[in-house]
Image (cartoon, rainbow, N blue to C red; front, side):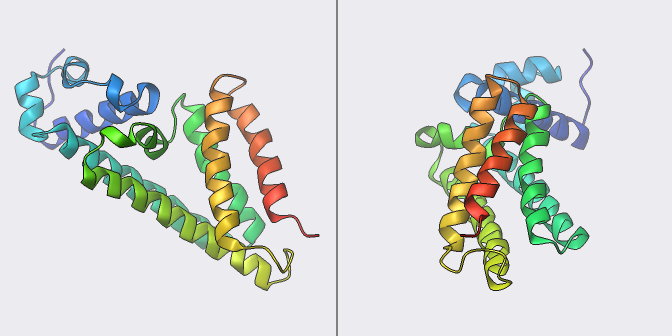
Length: 194
């Protein structure tokens, strides 16, 4: 297979590495796997990403940017807070439909083997998501759409943990269909009024 040069090669490396991490996990992916799929030498791969940590951090930054852009789109296309939560869950369902897992969820499973910088990047991804969800849930509570005693941050953490877990369970079952069923129940349980 002929290698693509320049920026295209870098993007292809990232695309392949992201797919491998999302389907196999970081520790089951090697530079040899990536170079074979992209059609370049391992030396060329090291030219673009000197270390695996450099590659991982770039993957996290790229994935996070796309995820945060999706959150911004949700906010600009609906003011309905319940719909925002449903669309948030749909981000995960769409990833699962592609037979992949959340990149940062997969990296969290390999957390102890990540560099300190990559660990921090994964933590920041989840903190950003928790903050976004807590704000949406807090706005629902302020509007009277939730029980007054709902702790928005605790509810946000429950949603993140539940969706990541639902991806794992659904991966072994009916995929995105099962995930959507679990997500619906999770959101209803977390945001229900007394």
